Image (cartoon, rainbow, N blue to C red):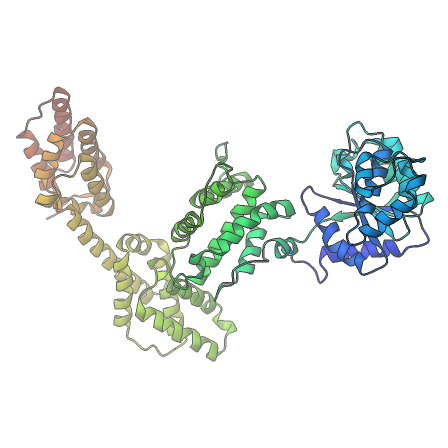
Length: 598
């Protein structure tokens, strides 16, 4: 988010308006222009009015919404004077005093002020009599006047107020940009050219808007800085629209009250990021920009700006979909209670930010240690003690195993005294690997662990990789040791287990019972039979270490073929699939023919 300078934009704008009001020598008007919904009216009725109340001027805000004639405008001015906050009674008294000499006031004005209906002059005279030098006239919603308004008469009124009566006037409208300037109506062009000397852009500071609208009633937390998380969400959304923030305020307030945000058992960083995302998504939805899947396909140039933007939008849509309760909360037909929000937030944080505190702390230490050349011994010693404690607990995720090894090497290079041996270190790492064998085997076999040129370091990583692969094979083997109680597995389920095992190590396939595979094939329907058969077709393309299958693998295929030859399938189409299956097995036998590994 763009950091606001020492003075917020709203305060700078008030300074400009104050300078205008103090200019007694020149007669001119000023303008304030800003995007729709950016909070112009909120600024005028809030900050500006509060500031003027401390000085000599009274704010008279007049909305030009729907105005068509000069009389309409004068009547709005009178009504605004009558209803001046805390000063309305004085205005009413003044109106009653001159009531016998006035004519042409609308019924609404008569009803509100009690003025006599026997009047002799028009609404313009009423306004001119009631307006004083202390009044600062602010005409809001200028662009929303009637499409059929008498713009020449309206310009004459503005000119009269500024040049004849010497009043201070500010016109407020949505920003005119680009081609819109060319399409300005006569009134807008004339006022700009002849009356308005200075146009001030209204660009609210996002953080100031957020503090004013979103943070007033946040539930305090023991450790979570909710205000900073909300500001981060505002930054991510790019929201500078006050109306959008107001629409999202109630939902954000309810989210900030959730018990999950008070749960110190969940890593502080994870709660912070999830709250940031919730605010981000709530504001996007409130602005009408809820993330959606891109309609066009991904550009072919994979590093082009268009391709990167495509990936960003897909990722944002997927993330938003994981927090679907946000969109439901804005749906008019949706019914989202606090329990829905609580569960939706928990589901999101578990999926998107699953890392525990130890994992986050390991990553933080690794990040700091990479800049060890900037640290003193005392700093490194503090990091080292925290690191050694985390390693011995072995509660961190296998995802940061590389960080753990990296810090271990860095401390070793610095000759730091380690409280445990390398064998103990390996034992602690294996405990982490055991908690997630699949991911550990994949990560340890990647290039990041074998990139170090020093043999000792590669040897340690290779030992951990062998351990992960061996333990994973044992796990896969146990899954493929189909017992009597597991013979109800479908063909699809068996095919999936076989495929997972083959991707890891084809040698473990021999633990799957040929009898159970064949019996499952014979009793299943067409889809399950095809799932099994196609696995063996796929087996043709599976990589065999050394290019030569083991004797056990060849024997396993022959046992399946023999068992299938000794069975019958009752249906005609099933018999056809059995013949195709036998042919596939014969082709495998031919491909895996001898010589084989002993």
